[in-house]
Image (cartoon, rainbow over all chains, first blue to last red; front, top):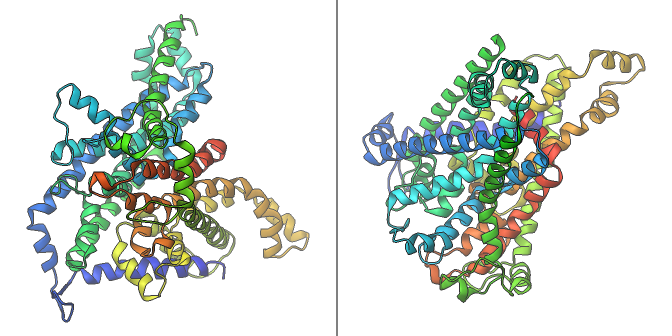
Length: 279
Length: 282
């Protein structure tokens, strides 16, 4: 049976832990781990009554919106430029896609180093023009820093997909529009952009998933969730609450909620795939 | 085209060059920082040009290690990262190609159930189920081992889907031809399917190698000994919260070293990389 290796690994390291998470989210353990009670939905109730949870939720939403907007628009601009038949566009492509290979945690370290208030180069520049930059104390600035690092890392991915999408736009349509007298700007918005919409939508979903999960490394190296939870996202909270083993039930309940969210996202993506078939 | 393109091309060059510069700036700063000594950086006086300490820093980072938090030489960390990345890449390709072959070419009860069981895992990255998985691995006694690092991350469906899609494009005539030639299921796999899949395998390898090398949260939990940590974890441990204690020049050297292998893979195998990435998401 050729399926056995994968099924086995999937069951042991995927379904078993996932079911544990669901089970654990209904349990309440006392501080010493001596007794465990089955408490139904109490963990969820406690969780949903905590303002910190909504703060993490808001952080995640804000984070997604900013990262999605900036990384998509910058990547689209660059892809449109690289799609022109100019010399060296291949070289430019190579020079633009390498950040994909950088680990999120390393990307975080690079940006943290540049913006470190006491020794970072950019922070020095900001101070010299009189801007009070200190992401270690100011939550909004910390958020901005994390967003910049996440955008920087994600541009390459979006760029690649936009470029692939642009190259599949039929040249004849564009030429026809040119002959009809449409200027480049108008050609882009009325023809190319609508034809790109499947790519854009796909990237939107991917970017949200990226912000949800892959930015953990960035957040952990840049801010560690702080100052006072200003950059704590949902995934980071799962980790932070479960780390000391202090609130395993709460952490598991958060995992389950996240799980539902991801499934919803995937369902949305599937419906979109169906729609693409009907195009 | 019927219009003057010179201005547009010029604009494209300007924007692309700006984009490349912005993207490369953090890398350049890191490189510069890895060529200066600690006191220059700590005083916040890092210049914009490389300094004279390049060889010293790289030698010390690779073979001696930092003097505080983690003393492990980075060379060992890179070795750990390499083992983990290769194990994940090869392990995934191995189990995925087998199960995709089974799903596409065999008819057996519960075939689709098995496929869906695997498919669902696509939706859940390891970050969500991190603590329960950790517990399972700890119960199995896999902490601080290479298989503990790699095996749980192999459990994912991306590769299975990729191979499944590819196998379905292999014409049935080939299967019939090899049946007529008297080849069994194994011969058909070895002599026909495998050679045809080489590009797909290579593309998946590139993606998975980068994925494995860049793992952060999982190795962070699973490795407790300094001698087992990967380079991505090592760098985090080098950066101590108190700025003055961090040996930034060594941390930045480590950052350079940590970026080198995956970036080299992407740049050298760009064609395969793009194929792997774009195919995977279809």
